[in-house]
Length: 358
Image 1: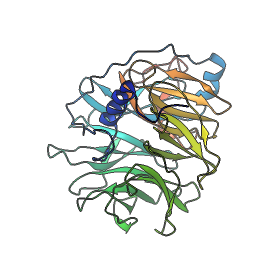
Image 2: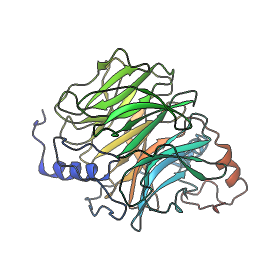
Image 3: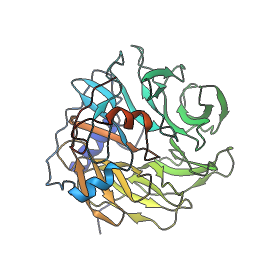
Image 4: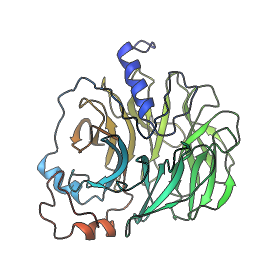
């Protein structure tokens, strides 16, 4: 039986994770820092031996779309994409003027990516969209404070996100062009990290309305709010399986961050990782067989993939970044703008193989 007290090492890991998290709310149980564009985390963790990708698995994963994630390199924080076998690592926001873009999510058809960015020196945060065909950036919000954590409706016409326009953090829904449609939540506590269900009917999110970060679910019209978790540690970063049968999330209920999944009613709780390092921010592959997540088990935060058939043996995806975080798997296996760009390039299955930027 693990002690409910958080060990010193785990406390340091959690402080590091909160430093790295996008739009992390203040007043959590442990200290929170808000990153700035010039701040690159300086935490180095004791590395563990990590497994590498088997060749037969690499061939299978190469056909399962793309991953997008946040990478910190040289004082910048950018949105990158790569194949889930580790090949073709591409920086999408390297030309962004303020050097801070993170927490990317895919549009349902894979044609574009929405993400958080700091556009200027006033350190407000807005939501941007990039169409992958031309890689142009389009601002979807321009409000005071933080607007972040976008998640698309399954038909791609709406985006649910967190906004602190009134000094509090609530959930709002806008259309894909940035026009506001609905305020989904209105509570004195913080609501954040929403994720739209694959059937379009529900939105799962993290809230501090009970005094601790827990996972809630609500209908997309704002009715039928329900609490799914109730633990002393942080429960956050929820994401849906493609069939809508499972919600994966990060939890600190055992003293350090691990990945669990549960049914949309909170039942059938299943632990996927059990490691002294921090494992977090899970998202499913488009076929629902794999989960990508970030972990500190390699020494710094890097990307890992586990198979739901064998979750105890994940493998490491090397990246160019010493801090690779907040991964999201594409919802479809074919991303035309990216697939066309790499067609004919040599070394298509070689991890880290770069391609020219259009």
